Image (cartoon, rainbow, N blue to C red; front, side):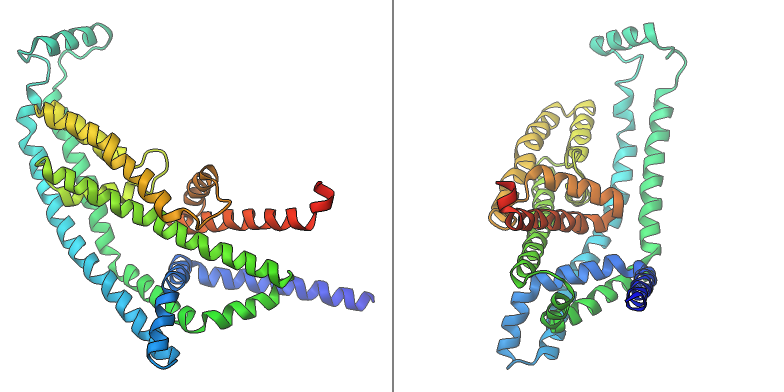
Length: 353
């Protein structure tokens, strides 16, 4: 008996060690593998239909599906990166051209309201002798350099991005082709009743759908709406600001307001008072309400038991803990929590009552 217990303990220690080493090996590609699993789960119905049309040939169907998704991702990304390069150039030039307009709002201008404001500010702060025009110019230069440096660093990591993308597509191919078999083998390792195993995997699958379509699709919708509004108001660089709106919609609390609020203030202080007010109103109503309409439309019925507050903490905590991968991992962990709580309520129904 002692020998058996000792062997089991030794085996568990070795298994944990091997799993940890394997995790260290996988960690550089973890985000790519997670995205591969996510994409395979999302496009599995399409893959199944394609496999049916191709006479059940799994390898050919998975390869065709991966090729289609690759073209759907790479071509728009290339167009986007080329557009952003031009937009950054245009944005910097536009900011520099507006410097003369900003100087009208500095101390010494002939606008009575502004002069009263600067006089009031001067009673509490020593602003005499400060060259606001130079400070503004330096700030614009710093922001432009910061953006260009980071954009350049992203382009400088093209090799790493390409490798991660290839790992994602490679993983997606095998998860599409062998996903059902992998899930079946994984279920054998989970010491739960078959009904509970199905409950866990079903919850994970529905949360993946809800996460992808409810968060990323909403962000894309908000970016498109914001870009159209920027274009209609005649704002320079609508592609840049629309893209920024889509990305920042993924950030909890701040969200899209990080783009349209500063943009509105910039328009107002640049003399385009009407445009600034219109953007403030449309930002708070149209851009903000896209989230309230699109997200429930997509998520409704797909993530039962996932309260909005739980989703918020899952996203915020996931981002802080795992970075961008937390946008997927956070909701999945929350989904496991909800599922295990449901299993707990079923198993201990009598004790709870």
